[in-house]
Amino acid sequence: MEGIEHRTFNVNGINMHVAEKGSGPVVLFLHGFPELWYTWRHQIVAFADLGYRAVAPDLRGYGDTDAPADIASYTYFHVVGDLVALIESLGVESVFLVAHDWGAMIGWYLCLFRPDLVKAYACLSVPFRPRSPKMKPIPTMRAFLGDDYYMCRFQDPGMEDEIAKYGSEAVLKKILTDTKPGPPCLPKENAFAISPNAKLPLWLTQDDLKYYSTKYDQKGFTGGLNYYRALDLNWELTAPWTGVKVKVPVKFMVGDLDMVYTTPGMKEYVHGEGFNKDVPMLEDVVVLEGAAHFINQERAQETNSHIHDFIQKF
Image (cartoon, rainbow, N blue to C red; front, side):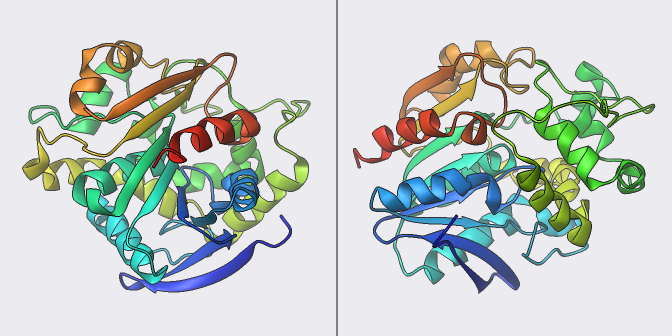
């Protein structure tokens, strides 16, 4: 962590906190839920040592970045707008993009909206999913995965109160350490219950967990939850991009136990014709055996090697 600098940029009407280290071509790292720039701590140091300028923001709603209250302020247009302004503020014409989870979803839309800004995209855990003109996201998820599916439960305005009952640290520990394959569900009873004797995995220390929980104690979870709450709005707004393909070079990496990868239908899409059709410049799909969702932390060195092997070609 030594040598990581912290700066604040005014982008797209908000103040965005950024952690960065190194000099050279910019590698822009986008985190997911419920994470922060901190999820990329291993990558920031490693890529700075490899001769890159590693840049990892707290996305809007997270950490030390501003968190607008309105759900409608968390559309792809807002968040991609933040990134376009950030790239300009960094003084570069384009970046190597690395993203995970919600960051990966945002990354796909940055590639759709502004492919000129992305040299190559190393995507972790969440593949591109084309917009279905007839299937609105949340009602579709309710129909196929049930009301307890986590994205459906996150629509509940009482979710913040539910989280507060358990406390930030317990909720984060539950989410970050859950390695159960398949679509995650949050039953109304004991949604975030975790054994008091549950041990942290080797890749997550108590100090790491404390860093996350301290920031969430300060900021709350509403910003992160608002991304999920804007899903149907995103679907409405992105109608003009129905059928548009992602035309940047892409490498996709995922753990074979990942909750997204093991959701019904996902493996068939990733390894069938669908993914290649929607992302015609897809160069490689890497499945890490025995790894779950947070591969950039869980298998940091292996993930770094795959990312570097890819981006050094461009």
